[in-house]
Image 1 (cartoon, rainbow, N blue to C red):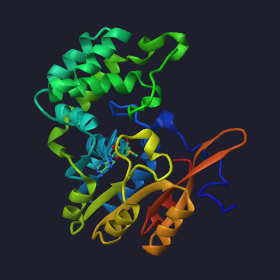
Image 2 (cartoon, rainbow, N blue to C red; image 1 turned 180 degrees about the horizontal axis):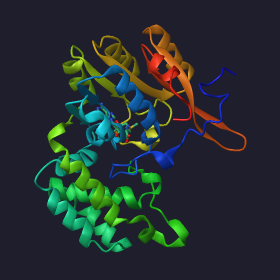
Image 3 (tube, protein in one colour; image 1 turned 135 degrees about the horizontal axis):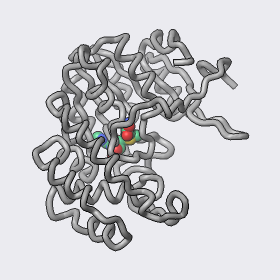
Length: 293
Ligand SMILES: C[S@@+](CC[C@H](N)C(=O)[O-])C[C@H]1O[C@@H](n2cnc3c(N)ncnc32)[C@H](O)[C@@H]1O
């Protein structure tokens, strides 16, 4: 078995307790655990523009928009998302409708019936769609809102849906995001249409697409052309960092397009060790990181 980076050190990857969380989403495949790598990548490459073309819960983009260490480096964060429900949340947060959303969250009394009613109201307006998505994301098992995914049954401590409703935390996160809205450009659209606009710029492209293996179960939109992603990333003037599942198919693309990759442990249980790939042209910054972080 090939060695993973930092394998020999006492390195507990999901050092998640130390990761600042800003996203209002519990996102399947959310990249909060990559926080320290993304920080190091940005500090090393100093891009003035950060682009996250498959934004989802936008853990990386939000950290870059909000965290003090990025303020003097990155002027603008561009988030792109195709899913209309996810997009409605970002559109509302970055608009004057954010106060309506905050009020709605604060006054909501969580119950099965109330959640169902909120979700069914999603077609009434963008802001209702945003609220419906926030509720759906909370009550669905694993935060998965793709068709066919179920609702949480027992919740934490067997307290059902109530245990999933942290109105105050959501309000605080949304306020923090809204406060940096001048630094963020949200685009509802297709990554493949938007990416070419940024390839000629000194931008940092953080590319976290639906993974070839698990994407279909997790997201409404998961059918993406991975070769096309690599082709775009390979032609970028700036820097591109991609994350992928650790599969032969992906290793073949890494080689074909002249990228470098490192396997990183994302979780360990008694018998299994799950790894994912970080991919870029130059990973010197990653290899020189202090694994203790
Ligand atoms: C792996 S998730 C991103 C997770 C994100 N990095 C986070 O921290 O939450 C991939 C996202 O890409 C979106 N997506 C799928 N196809 C897309 C496309 N063609 N253009 C833009 N977004 C797309 C999915 O809806 C999903 O939200």
